[in-house]
Image (cartoon, rainbow, N blue to C red; front, side, top):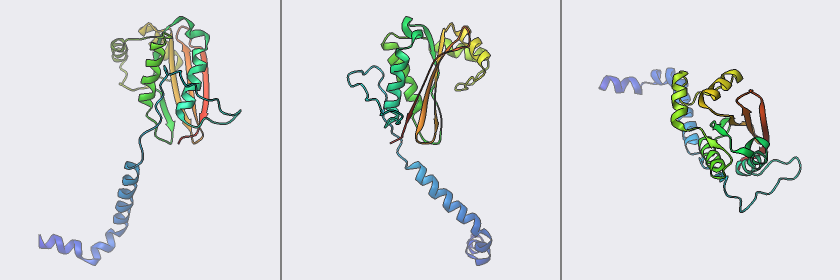
Length: 197
């Protein structure tokens, strides 16, 4: 024990290890900062239409992701494909930005709002998991190839797939897209920009 203590207290050991110690201290400091960052964002409530969100001035980004989501969903609800409550697969919204957003929560709220409004018929989760397993897809693996997405949708019995992304630096962009799974054609697309609070 005394040998170990004397090795760590010797100036020669400290001199050789100084760059690693500095890196370690900086890494711990940065982890502490990141760990203390706020993890809450405004929550989108798609079924709450009592207070419609104000439209931003022409060309101006929305003041929050919540307002951008409301504007995008309003446009989606006005789209022709959702007039007949089609069977729709709602994919999790992807966060491709450099900021934290609780996209899983946004995705769940988006689907719940569209279902409660009677605008989509969701694919049952049991069916989604069975098809994903039969195709050898991981739990959250995203599909990007349009032909694979169409095959996936047909196996699920879905008519459309709704997907979304948050991209860019502030002002960020929220992009929602509705794909016709029979043809692979984008049936509707909306993009709203916003600044994060």
